[in-house]
Structures are given as structure tokens and as C-alpha cells.
Image (cartoon, rainbow over all chains, first blue to last red; front, side):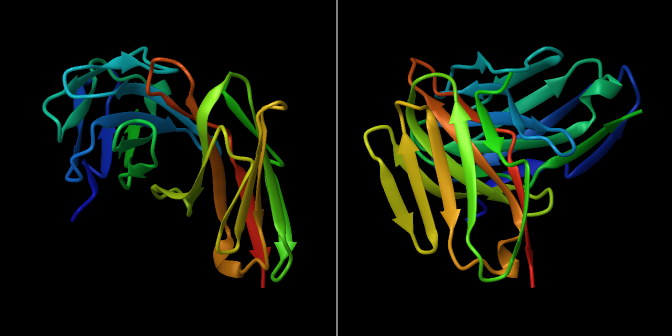
Length: 112
Length: 112
């Protein structure tokens, strides 16, 4: 069991470029989440998906879009990257949104 | 502003001492969870306490929840150098969403 897998692990983008962060879980979980963590800070919720076919905004959704491709996969897209989006991005999943969440190892994104 | 605020922001103790971290939140919750993060890696779930519970134990961890004060505490007894990490509380909001909102975290240093 891999748990929650994020790709890529590291990425450097130029301002204005676009990219998609991929996340997949193999635990048959219903709920999936995308967070960002800035240096020395807690995690802030960008978007979440309570179940397959649904997505909702979190605390800091501006500049991002998401797709819940199927039950396993939840991707995060930056359409036009900005330096303020430099952060570590974490994907997580939970069985049904009322239980513990399992996290991927993170994607370190730098926008120059 | 974040749902959960933790106190203290940083804590330095000697090995063998107890460590106490506090979390306050703003809105009603289904449950409150504590997570640990080692050095910028993915978060690991420690313990979950439901809104109708007041205290929960897991090994050297003791969590309390006071819903009237909207606060929780995490006690780590007989700390070890390996407990050095950042600790976060997360609240599962009592609404129709499945948001899991994190606090700002406490950085714990356990000195050998």
C-alpha cells in the first residue's frame, strides 16, 4: 500500500507558467484535500472534495483549480503561477471526512 | 484567520519532562484531531477526540477537549528527543462540509 502519493516532489516554475500537481490514494477514501504550508506556518486548506464528483473551496482557493478525476485521484492546477504561490503543497485523504486524514509527502513548489 | 490557534508557538523542554500544547478554535466541531510533522514532511495522525468526549489517551499522549471553552490540550508525558517535531490541531467543522481546518502549530524541541 502506497497510501497517498504526490507528484512531483519538487518543481520550479517561472511566473505565469502553469502546472498540475497530481495526487492519488489507494485506500478507497471518499474525501480528499489540498493544503499549502508556508515556512513556519500551519496548513491552509485550498480545496477539498467530500466525495467523488464534488469539489469545494477551502480557506485560500484563489489562483487554483482542482479536478476530482475519479475516486483515487485529485489534482491541483495553477493556471498562472505567482511568487506568492511558492509553498509546500500537501494532499490528504480520509475515509469519509469525519475520520483521520492521511497525508502525502508534499510537493515543494518555487515560483521565480 | 485560522480556525485553530495553538499555544505556545514554540516549546523547549528537557528529555523526560512533560510537554503541554493548547489549541483554541472558533466554531462548533464534530471532532478535533492532533497531528505531528517532522521537519517539513507529511503529517501523521496522532489522536482524534469527538465532540462528546472529554479526554482520550493513547500511549504517552493525553488529549482533553472542553467544548464550552472551545479548547483542547495535548499532553506528551516523559518526552523523548524523538518527540521533537511540530504538532498541529485540526478541527472537523460541524457543518455540512467535510472541511478539516488546521491550526498554526506548536514547534516542540526536546533536548537530550
